[in-house]
Image 1: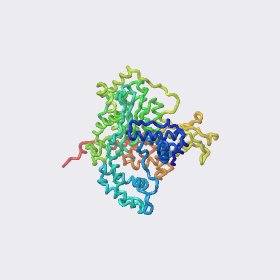
Image 2: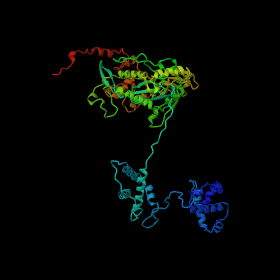
Image 3: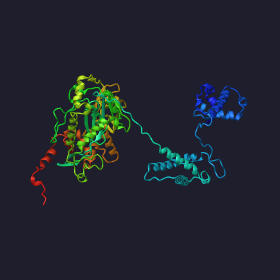
Length: 624
């Protein structure tokens, strides 16, 4: 809504006092403009003092309309926009951008062409975006762009209006030039604006890097540029299959350059449980892997800092730096970092990996050794070290466990490699020196009562069963029952359940005031394998799509993965499903996956291995 100067003073009476108006330094104006400025100042001051307009105009030898125009220039305008005030007293100063308020000219009614081109650009849907797209293509030399000239640009402007059925009796068709000059000026101004140099946003990192141990931790995950294999036993026959790429999660200390923890996720997209497993290794003693691959062995001093003594398992971490991945922004990871580790979570700026250059350097250094393996995917699609197409049809020569063991040995060896920025000392020596001579704070041994890093709680309602009177709890598409709910008074009452996100086959039930009631179990069809919430959701989605049966969804999912075990991604999912299963669970299934992760006493695997003959020179094919 447009306001006059009188309406403005009625809505904002504080402008009656001329002393409240902003100050303008008249010395910066030219002599002629300075004289006009002081005259305008005298006019406005007399009007605000309450004198009539005719009297002010007669005293300064001006017309009353001039005084009204000056007051409107300073105080009138849109009610949502601030008034010009003192800026309106400066002569010939443009206060606001010109804008057309009347309708466009037609053949029968001429209303002028001022600001008509801009009015058309803002009125016709998609016109301005279409023209700006063509201008950007011309500036960036796009393959679909044109070498624009004013005549070509004006022709595009007119052609778009005709395609949109713009009336032929309205501007620009009422003008002989059809808005050519306005289109030329718009093209000239747009080209000049797009060709102006743009300063890239500069991100300033910390100038003083941390020098103390555990003061700053960098955490990230990356795909291993190598594919492994696993042995699948089907009908007493062992078949090697190709697996998809796995992910490596690393945690590195900035002050000493030491690797604090490293874990593997049997998936290309780690979830929050994988991140929590890495964070838990920071406060748990390191246990070396059982090396079975030939040629691999740990050195006498190899290991992570958590294997030294108890003090290295409970340091006080300062800042834990992660990127802006959704898995890092989850509430579980935040709670683990802040509550359990007592650290500060820093997610940095988007698309700024330089803030975590140390962990990026670790992955780049690790790829140098991983690219020695024949099943590597290379650093880029044209890498000469990339696995050739003729070898991609067969399973890789390197097994998954051998790949994990090799990477584990490399990480521990890096901790005992001298670094130039540490004065030719190894990260482990530097950390031992700081722990022995510096006052590094330690966390308390007991964190007190509360949920563990993998535990979650939820409030649910106890319901009555459909077929029997046994109470139940609905959770993630399953009905949990047990002796803890066998009380008629608890039906339709709310309780708190506590569960482990890695295995939801059982739930712990508590009352709302914290009294423990006991444990409830999922149906027997969901008890075969330990499965997480994410896997339960995936199985339920397949059930809704009629890909699995509702009677035995977990067994059907196992059979579904077994039927597609030749696909690397499904084979990796099958391996992840059976990685945490027990030997009793494996004996119930006809298909089992054996990759040194499972128990070594698998009867089917032993029988298949015994049937394989030993290698002899007679097996070699001789060329004729």
